[in-house]
Image 1 (cartoon, rainbow, N blue to C red):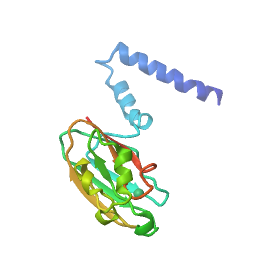
Image 2: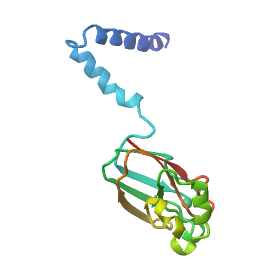
Image 3: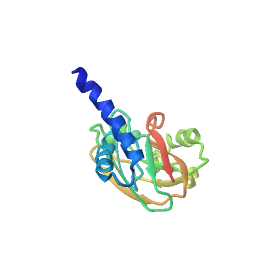
Length: 170
Ligand SMILES: [Cu+2]
């Protein structure tokens, strides 16, 4: 057991040393190192313009950070994976333009039931949105955004405090 625990760091150190000493010639060592990298360096949010997002009965999105490429079309699918009725636990996805006062928007959205919780007088703040989804429903939208960091929220009454995140376009 002791030897096994010691062997790994020693091997890694030797590997790193070899790589820097002979980066051009030692292709075998480079291949070995590359093949093990993805398992140890999985980022929380990878840059992808195909986004799969879920929302559940616990008022949670599956992620609070979405990273996309700026200036290229994003295809985003939101699925409500909950089972509670739409009237009490509906979910949507609203991408808000930079500079939007999220609190003010969400407060107005609460009483905008007629327009799917999108306040008519702040509609211009919405860069993209899905409709309000009931249990098992999903919706796919496409949009393109310039580089920047944007807020996204679920505007169903009482949800945005938990159901919010950042979309980062770079
Ligand atoms: Cu919601």
